[in-house]
Amino acid sequence: MRISKRCQNIKGSVTLEIDAKAKEMKAQGLDVVGFGAGEPDFDTPEHIRQAAKEALDKGMTRYTPASGTMDLKKAICEKFLRDNGLHYEPSQIVVSNGAKHSLFNSFQALLDEGDEVIVPGPFWVSYPELVRMAGGVPVVVQAREENSFKLLPCEIEAAVTGRTRAIILNSPNNPNGFVYTRQELQDIGRLAVKHDFYIISDEIYEYLVYDGAEHVSIASLGDEIKARTITINGMSKAYAMTGWRIGYTASPVEVAKAMTNYQSHSTSNPNSIAQYAALAALSGPDTQLKSMVAEFDRRRRRIVELINGIPGLSCIPPKGAFYVMMNISGLFGKKLNGEAIVDSMSFTRLLLEDSKVAVVPGIGFGADSFVRLSYATNMANIEKGLSRIADFVSRLTD
Image (tube, rainbow, N blue to C red; front, top):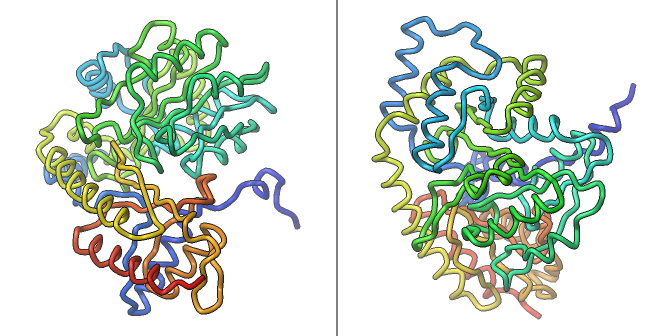
């Protein structure tokens, strides 16, 4: 008996691993403060839940077209036109089982063995693995904290080779919280046109922006850029629908057709009831979304203030999403009960075991001098968790 090399080469998600350990400790009755997995701590809005019940009552429990219902695809087209100034036809939309599945389909449609994808680092943990699962080669290019973790055009261009097939962009960003400006995206788009590679633009945190930051969909910056862009989005973050598993792509029609054919043989259609609920979300009121963003902003300001008040720790204020990258390099070499902190894993393990605070080690994002904290948790947990981190740091010795 053996496992395929393809699966052997895929690493598990550090994010979900830490979250699972924290939940296990909680199940044992331990008071754990978790800053791990990234999902809104709000209920799915009432009108969306009601739509799901309506779908059940209407008997909408059968197969739909593999790429999603026509009504939902039309609503997604209307969303792109309304929010992003982008015109798409339903034939260019593919609805999948969450934005991660949409990303999977995109890489499967674009990549042959050995094709390269530029992955800006620090990166969401799944990007390199999704590239590998499609036979591609992730080319990680590390951005610097002093540049707000954004890659400069010259850094991207230096990574381009004859095998470069795509670049993956995520703005607003997980794990850094940065938001690319219109001009920065324009510069990246020009590189894609110049070197003829695709842009896979993950815009799942589109509505979660702060401090006057503007989300710009890169496909809106010109026809040549749009022709090389696959835009990824979904319902999970903005509508607190993580478990409903509805994501979607907008792309050139030939790419959409390839993804549709692939999906028809792999998963077939997304959940029929969740599709009906997603239609209600896209066409309904956004009252909860606005209040959710305001609350995330309040938490963001507080967590940044608390982190930067702890000696040896620091962070730059994120402009989007609901994550902050905490720089822990000032603690390297320090010890707790004789055990040294030498990287993000040792920091994370000691913090969880000693102080019952769960954060995500930066090694999973390609950034071993950092850990990620999600502020998709209530203010009481933020206060308690950062108080424990401050106490933990105060007890470290040289």
